[in-house]
Length: 281
Image (cartoon, rainbow, N blue to C red; front, side, top):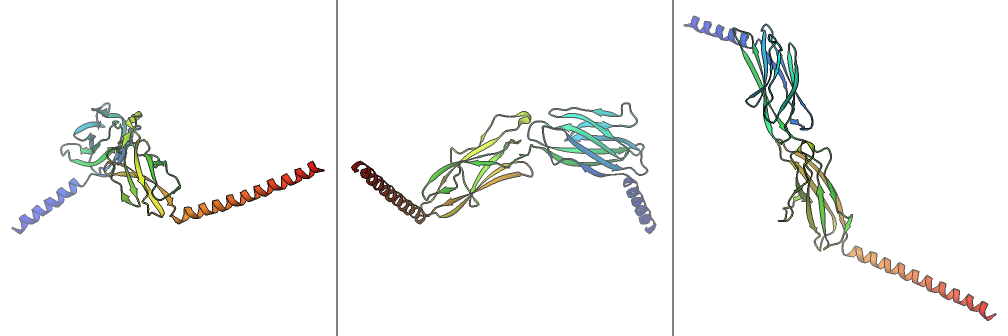
């Protein structure tokens, strides 16, 4: 009985040694792919004593690339719906392929499959996901914000995102509190640019409470709803004058105007006196 167990254990060790004689050591697939430029995918493998039969690339369940060193030509490309395979290059331990992503926000699985020559034809596979997304190059821009507001005032702010795919969703925060949009405050989008990119914008109605003072921090968040999400934001600080501050400025202004009026009156009186002196001579 023990001999049978030892024989099975030895066979299992031998099988593990055979199947581990080759392996995919590294698979590089971009997490995000910009629809305006080609994405480069690479598969690195180690064959040891095994002979390479083929390397195949799949997008989801569809084969898009095949490398078979024993065939002429050794490389074949398979263009499928919404994606174009631009080319590739394979060596003894690696295989690279370039694909042009479709101009739509989508997520797909890319698989590298490496197989050995017969009679064993062992196969190794690894898969990673790539999301088609054009990430904004700049933060969103907030316009319409004065540096100073008075209690009780109301203003309208606009937040505009940079071009992206998918279009950004716009969220507003006041002092880190999410502002639920009013019925008319939906996110608007521009016409599509090359690659399907669009701008987004949304308006915020900001009401300053009558008792407010100090400062208000307003934040606009442009978020791409992909996996994982991509977020860019912009912040502004608005100063709120208290009720005592304007009166101070008003009193200063009144005092200054009174002083200027007195100076002007004295100047007029002085001028009239001098004119009368010359007239009466």
